[in-house]
Length: 215
Image (cartoon, rainbow, N blue to C red; front, side):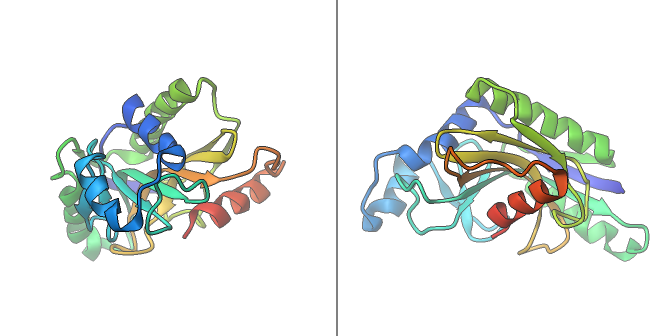
């Protein structure tokens, strides 16, 4: 797999902490949520992924409820990278999809690279993993390499941490919306009871992850 273009905005410890704190944050009334998210949290609207929020750190945040503040059952995707997995049998798409990735890099704090290769994406994910581990105070509980069910590529490591009520998943993730071909590099926060055990073998673990983050 060749990666033709990569845009990313490095995860910081502050950005990771803020994501992890959302389910336990003080709730606000639904009618006040948009104003609160803009004035207090520093979020703003973006359509880079879909209709989502651009955080004050420059990452794209989407969630599966209308008002996630203080909701322990809400799930989140924090997208901090976008990769174009180039296939030689689709040369006509090279320029337009590279330009799509370049659009991501126009967001403040984002960087653009051409032909980074799978190793470049692995490096970005490894750096993000180091940040998440520093915030949580532990290495990932499990790692598994992604496959075609996650995205067209790159097939990089998916890392999973656990908190008392959530799983924290760092992974490449297929774009199901605006682009339909690019790959997100995302940090997902999904509800997961502390007593729930992760599947022991890799195929089952991949299925477990996809059922929870692919919405």
